[in-house]
Image (cartoon, rainbow, N blue to C red; front, side, top):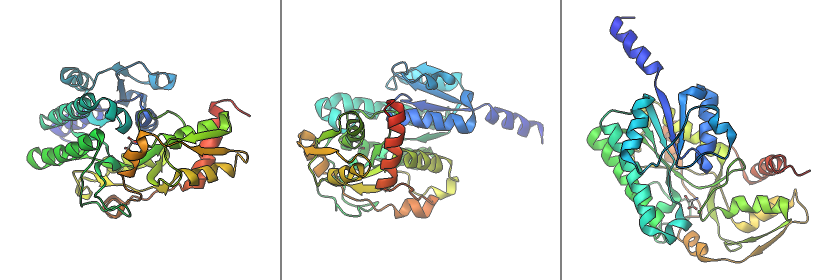
Length: 330
Ligand code: SER
């Protein structure tokens, strides 16, 4: 190995991965998975608040407000960051209550990261988009990768604008940015907050704790969903895919399981026989009604071999088993 190669190699060996929003629903599990793969000290966790989960402190943890450009740059320089997983966002339901805050947070934090990549402070960005980029005028079944996109929520508008910025930075400045349009995500380790799809997590907690649940979406409101284990795998697979395989620089459609509140209720009933499910739709019903029911993810399958593993019943078994242990229920 030549001297220059050796220096290059050593510099790269010392580079780290940064997670923005490490205490959130996705950030928590992603940080733990990345650390399991690359080592605790190679993954820098950041969030605006201290973690509740003590495991997140087993590697470097820094308080960072992702809308603070200087703070983000300082941490990237301090830890010689190579890849940034940007998981900071205000979700759809909260975004409707605080439209300007949602726009500012979702946009500024992304643009700060894109600027750092443009200036070669960092090399790669993963940033999530969402099924919320689609709107009432989009075909609902098997929604294609490209087509009509007229989102009706602030969250969706910010994600669609973010996708355009990602592609723009890639085309203009050769920034290596990768993205997935996540469906609603279901997890037991950390809770979601402020999303329209959150009912599909709450329902499992309530089934175990109270034996009943009242859904804020209507009985047959079908949405695209995914189990967190699949989402984390997709995130890491896309981010680590060879450069030439990543053809889409806006955001990839990704499909897991499509279901409605009635079907997840039926799946839970197989394990919690007396489970009682009621429906009282609120303002989130209208948001959900504007989104697709199922997603065509053939581009992700083709480009980086994506395939989901969990179906509704296998997710239910895994969720209830893990939640029972977590909540210390017999
Ligand atoms: N889970 C998100 C939400 O409900 C959608 O990306 O806002």
